[in-house]
Length: 149
Image (cartoon, rainbow, N blue to C red; front, side, top):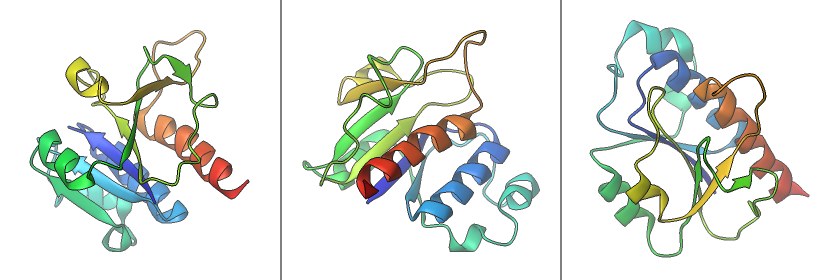
């Protein structure tokens, strides 16, 4: 299974869009607290509207809690602007549970966490970052493509 992990997400619209992507691909969405919004927030509901209740979403109190629950066989890939490999160079066709981890919109994933797996980036010209939901879509669909090839 593919897992999308949003580490301390701040913007409800991005989380709603990531939930929509997970529903469309059969991925599981993980949200690590603290969240920058309430899951009952009208903005999140507007983003998720009539399908949010169908999204396979798990909320975690901390990174450590998620990491322990994932188990030793889990494969973590961290998507950040300073990632070592482009996302298409990464082997996302693993038999293990694949966790694609994204940091909060205004800051990155802590280095101590990123040391636990491979780091990936999405090449960009003319901008320093992409919208979080856009970044999730790009790498998630590459993982789906690799797994179905």
